[in-house]
Image (cartoon, rainbow, N blue to C red; front, side, top):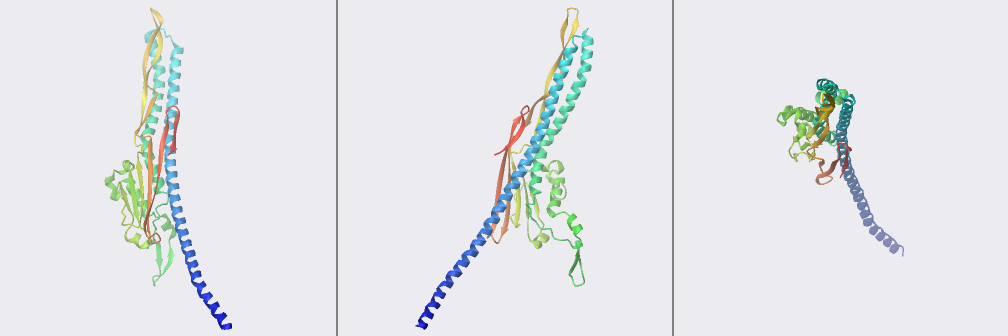
Length: 334
């Protein structure tokens, strides 16, 4: 009986062992799957947050510029009304010559003041499109989505006779730019390989900028990253970051409202003869935008053995500019 009981117990152990191995395998796969899903979710949320915050920040600065123009318009309008009231309050002048002489003296100061306000608004408007696009690109490419390593240069490390590293000049290492930083600065300044892209005054007009790079130290040393304005990224690299703009306003202009100033002077037939002086800068008639809505699309792609190939994540943020010269400007995320 003892031998029979022992054999039954051995058989039970043999039947439980495969079950435990299966449970262990399932647990390991579940942990790996959870880790991969968590990492993918984190990457997607980070990409979305950076894209949304970049678009919102740039749109906020754009609307602040439009509202600065609105402030100038209000000052111009009040200045015109004040000047008109002053001319009417001083009327009538004793003669036509005296009336025009005095009215011109009063008006030239007010007109010149309004012209200065209009010129300020015009300068703001000319830079709004450029600043919007530049802010969008800078916010995305400066948000550390490009996780390209920065290997030490030979002049930043010291080795002994056997070749072992004995010291590192961290100050020199920290002060040195990443490869991407140098490429981006050269692109914006129209230097190096980017002389034909338009230089300082034209780089921001690109609708697409991509940067392709590797994440392994050896690959970075042998083949640095590649910036591609207006082109598709180079998929021969392990990773890339692509930023695309669509419908982004690039031209903003302001038009002055031309009116006249009235005053009265005396003649032999009466003292309420009207005089007129042109005022070319009474206020700002309108702000013209070549587009009032735009989209920012950011794509991040990585090649990883864990994912079994290339994984590309994309997020798009749509912005609509709303408002008017008299109600003020704001934006909505759509």
